Amino acid sequence: MNRIKEVLEEKGIKQVWLAEKLGKSFNMVNSYVQNRTQPSLEVLYRIAEILEVNVKDLLIEKND
Image (cartoon, rainbow, N blue to C red; front, side):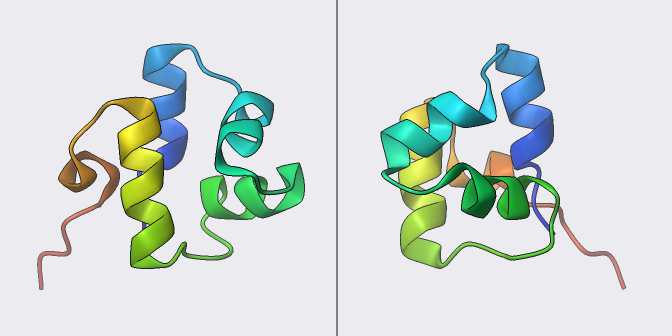
């Protein structure tokens, strides 16, 4: 699970803008945001770089 949706909302950034910056389709970014698909680590680090956050800020800790 990721927090991409929350970070985008906090920063007032639209998925379309992120898709453009990533060079990915809106549908792919939307699937990341909705947690239907998890981005690869490489893409996750790129998203963190674009959003100017630590990659850890994009992850949800799982407490078992």
